[in-house]
Each structure stands twice: as C-alpha cells, then as structure tokens.
Image 1 (tube, rainbow, N blue to C red):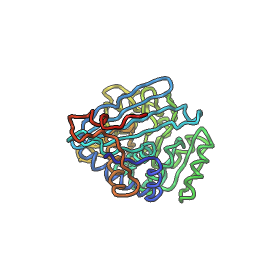
Image 2: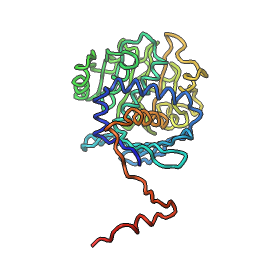
Image 3: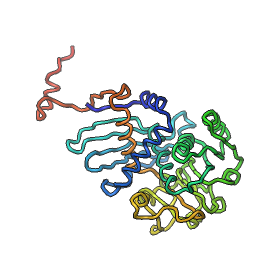
Length: 342
C-alpha cells in the first residue's frame, strides 16, 4: 500500500523534530541529489495560468524513483481566507509504476524552499555573514530565517514589508526563538549593513522592490519571490552587478527574475558548483545572486527525506490507493466480489 503523511502528521513531525533540525537534514538530501543532477529527467514545470493564479505540476525522476508535486499560486487568496500556496506530492517506484508515498506539501514546500536557499547560500555567501535583510514577511519568511540560522548561523534580521502587520507577525513568531529583529520602514533601511538579502513577496506583477543601489559589494542575494511569468522583484540592473546562479535555466528564464534579461544572459547552474564544474564565490567583494524559482528535484529530495525520516513511525499511514486484484489481469473481479446494495 501507499504510505501517507497528512497535514496533522506533518505538523507533529515538525513540532517533534524542530524546523532547524529538519532543515539541516533536508539540506543533506538536497546536496546529494543536486550533485547527481545529470541523472534526472528534467522539464520546466507544467503550468496552467488564469487571471486568478497558476496551477502547476512538477515532475522528475532519477530512473529509480519518480516524483511529482501539484502546487498552486494564487496571490489574492489571503484576502479571501485561503492560502496563497497549497501543494501535495508523490513518490513512485519506476520499476512497476506504483505510487509508494503521498504527502501534503504546503508545509513541506515551505521547508524545502528555505532549505534550498540556505544550501545555496552556504556555498555562495561570505562565510562570515551575520545579518540578513528580508524584504517581504509573508508565509515563507519564518522558514527562510530558521533555515539560514540552521545552516549559516544567521540570527540578526532586518525586515521590511509594505504590511506592518506582517512584520509584527514575524517578530511575534521569531523573537521568542532568539532572533534579533529590526523592523525597517523601507527597503533602504532594511538592507543597511546586510550580508545577505532575501526577497520574497507574493504580488504577481513586475515589481522593483530592490534596485541596484540597494546591493552593496560582497552581498549574497537570495531572490525567492519571482516564480512565474510576469512576476519579478528586482531591477534588471541588479543582474549586471554580479553573477547569477539558477536551478534549471530552461525554467528560470521563463519564470525567474532573469525573464527580464536577454535569452542568452549568462547564468551558472548551481549543481555545477557542487560538482566542481563551476566556481562559487570568487572574492569577498563579488555579488552573488540566486534566482530561485523552485525545481522538481528539490521536491524529490524533500519527499525522500520526509519518507525516510518518518518511516516506521505513527506519522505514516497506509493509504489504499491502488486497485490490486489477486489476478492482475482481472480488474473486474474487485467489482464482481462486492455484495449488491439493497
């Protein structure tokens, strides 16, 4: 039978293990899978765009296991009482095609997005980085902060959001956990003295929340918010100031910040840094930019980590998902064996 982790079990797992411990474990899986990037099937995610938002499928396979994620992005949802992003995902055995593991992925996507950001920053940010500016304090913000503390030890945050209530929400959630938080009144104030800048806003529009003058030499820029066509956060001039690292160029050029740039704008695929085929940070003064849109291999890693971390515990349940007659050629036997109703 297919194993299943639902929302309640996901929440209990996070509470039991702690976000930071989960992030650290997930980063190990991410680095392992990114280092064997060339073994995976890769396509840009399959997207259905409407005026309300986007619904996407994100598949991949290493030819031993297959995974996909269903995910939406509806930026106007919070005003209607719904989440901006919801998701679920699945692993399957390539050998017989049977689904082996199904899980909620709204929380898991938040964890894997932050873990991916922190993994990349560990290889690209200056090792002595101490302060992170956060532009946008929405649903992803706490996970990003905890991921960066787990992997890089960052505890000093400078935060700006156009909605002051979002910043207060962040302070309410993170200050009891030991973070030092400065609530900035502008982007300019937030980035002052920052070693790392994370941008993550929800508005599906071509915005410029960060300009070139906001990014000083030596900064690592973690650009998370641009993740679909027509949605950007950074001024195009930012990308000429440093080197840009991406997950999968074919998808990032459609959905990421570099959709603003020419089709041949040079980028570095991050997996090549892990395998030694490309260099990471070249100097203390270099500006490094991670144009993050989220890719299916990261979901593959997150699902495998969740499955392995919860195996044999009460957090997994059996899900009777697959019709499995005794005679594989006699599917109708399942119907024929049922007692008539009435």
